[in-house]
Length: 166
Image (cartoon, rainbow, N blue to C red):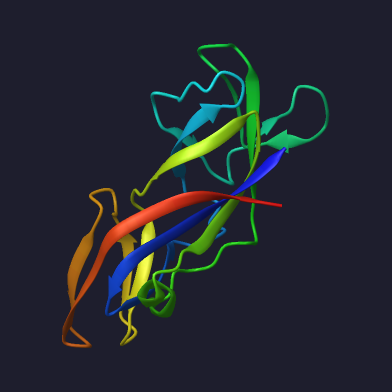
């Protein structure tokens, strides 16, 4: 069992509090990433999708997980379970310092998550308090104009990493 924390950062111009639409523990937010098999090293060709709302029962017990998937190359069955409560929004201060912020913790048994894909369903607010909802980051950036603050706002240089945590 290895836990991986999804860490994100971006350049936020006149923005703060970047996070999934209903917060870091949004049950409907979908996380897309590739999986690397812990046995043979094969990397999934398609993105894998997990969300807190979608659970499946484990075959050998009463517990549930968010994903059970077989490696197409070696046939090993592995799981990914999401652990809410550890994420936080990416603030302007964290962004300016160049640091990453934790978003979601994954308990991976047999797989290693890699290559997180930013998609839609994000929210962010301007430093003046204007809220931008249902932001689509699949293109790798977001640009708008904050009427209230009378300034441009932008998200660019999106980056994500999975850090092993104990």
